[in-house]
Length: 130
Length: 182
Image (tube, rainbow over all chains, first blue to last red; front, side, top):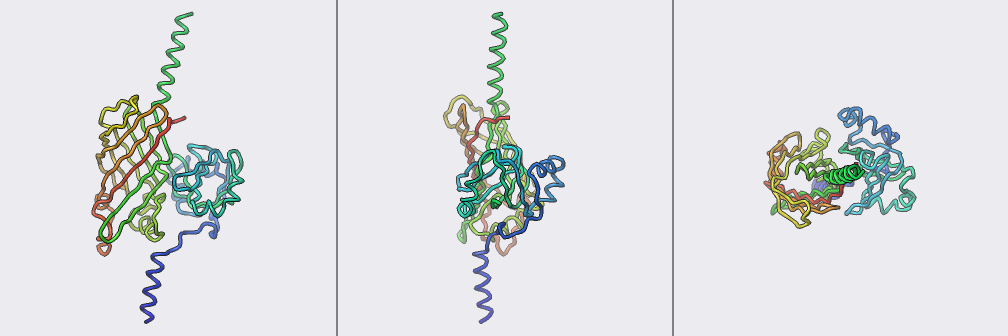
């Protein structure tokens, strides 16, 4: 009987595993976007190893804001092409709408998220505004 | 004096023509679909970066594997931790050439052959695909599809779940490019 309940619990969990919630996690690193950019420019491999998948809090000047087709929002800090891009997923956009409304081009934006690596810009995903 | 103006005018035209030879977007969509009788697994990234050079007929894509969103968080975790091994190989890349001749001024959609190297999970393979490209002065719209076999990229899927994932996974790409402002 317990085995059956355990099996159901496992299956339920598998289907409904909660996503990593950055608003509840503590940032391992808190830094200026400028510093993150310079570390990646200096050595992408070392910076990727240091920051990949870690919860980080990053702050910088918002150069552009765009909304993607899936309703998530991307805030580019310090440089539109080669800066730090913080993606807020659509669900978090809704629950943080008041805070996000205060962010505009030219203002300082602060985000906590997890670093997913570098393409032309450094990507921080699953962000919540701080 | 007239010669000087002519030179200047030519210089301007040349400069403008050069400025519009590269097109770019950071929001290209890459969707992959594994369809079996057991289950449909779909994942999408809205943040692929891609560049087209219409003078050299070259195209490049790169995407972070962690940017793919699945309907279920557990699938996403399996994808990143077990299959793609994203911590070891965070990026997937494509770099290639548009082999067909394209009239970039035409603004009519054309089907073109694209050939290049796809790097995923640390493995690089030559791939050929067909793309539909609609050129334009201020934007280029492109879409493409290709099928990949996970095993070709050393992606090992445990035999217990192998039937749940298609032998070939279909990758669809959609991008709307704008002129690259450097």
